[in-house]
Image (tube, rainbow, N blue to C red):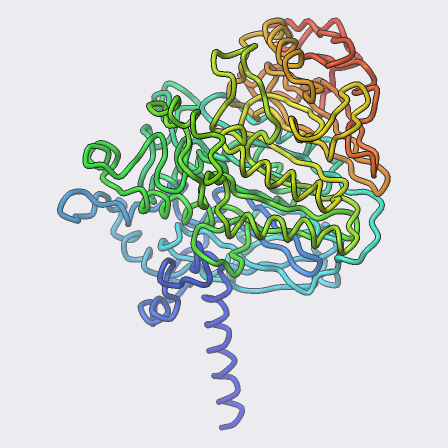
Length: 624
């Protein structure tokens, strides 16, 4: 009798763990269960329904695997296991709350009520031999979370490469294999960390070659994504345009956001990057809606007209739909959040650096430019009450910088969405400043700079995306501190801002982009390099002595290809707090330097051979 009770308790514990182990039932916040799926009620509702009701042959790992948010002893693993490629439409309704869609077969309607069971294993051997396995587990998923699975693999060692895979319980149906890496322990000495930094991957604008190029070269440890992982807008007609948006409209509902995220996760180079690296992502605005702020966005506000035209959802409901889908599909931790919109967090990467990931878009941002109010917001840019982050996040940010300095981390790397440095844009635009960037929130930027200067916080590097162009600047407090652009004296750090994976830049050809870049560096003393034509990414190699930044451009994103050009390379020495002179060794492949030359590659496509001809073969790389 005793052994029977023990066995029964073990079975109950396994069933409980299988439900609770899938973090996506708590999406988007573990502190607010009412916003996610009530797991106890879900278990009760599914009582008597068995995972084995599914024929494993019906089930597909539809969108590969992913990992992210690495800690020294754990990492997040992700997959999706479903009978269908498309997202479940059970939550989609029309007027009168009538279901809009039911799957075709009676068999599916019956079976869809049943959970799907998956097992995962993670080990140090690429072949996942039994002796190498360090953690295993079981998790259920259902249509309630669009059949996604997100688990935390534990019992791991710091700064160690692991391999993982998912399997449908009791079958040989396995996911593609994945590789990941834990972070170093906070007190570990680390000689080098490599990061690939991305932003702005617009599916309808081109192929995600940049993701695949870094994965094929395989010279980094982690991927940092600064936002605009998806776009909420619409383009193209399905069936005639291979990159047309799905759904074929601007997105508002939970189903819409799930479907758009799932579509992006069909790009082969994005799948490759997710399968090879642990990601540390944060959102920008397009994961929800263009130019978002605390109370709305350029595409939606809480007026009757907007509500009627824009999907029949409120600002808050649209944000919740977007955030829930994002947490379901991204390999990101549901940390102990203070509220459902918190994504800002920090990672201690050994003694080498602290990575501080900000949210300058959705958390508590004051009103931004919305197309109809741009002049008004421009007039407000110096208002002391304007904030990009809200007081809660802002105070946390300053504490994080100080605590990082106090604990002795060599570098402070700030993952942020928008360009921090002041940019005089008159060389490419009639508007002097872009009030949607930090330029529209002068007081917030000044408080940040003052904290860095007053507390002598050294070795600070801002990362930025969003602008679809490359910018490299010394970090200076203009009008308050003296600065010598020739030597970098007076700078308190460096900013590396990167172009888009595929979203359009500010130029239509290389020469036109170089001309505008020359005007931009002329008008901005701290801006040491500007480039606005190439799509691509940049890599950072971080050591205790220096940071090496390498920028790469993709010749085209109009079709999938593995080609890239080395655009420019920069060095920041520890303790210098400015770019090393001569900047980029005095020469770049495209764009313009403050002091130096541009060596422009002329590219033409050889349509007969499907390859690129170039006058500078030493700068062209094939990453296969």
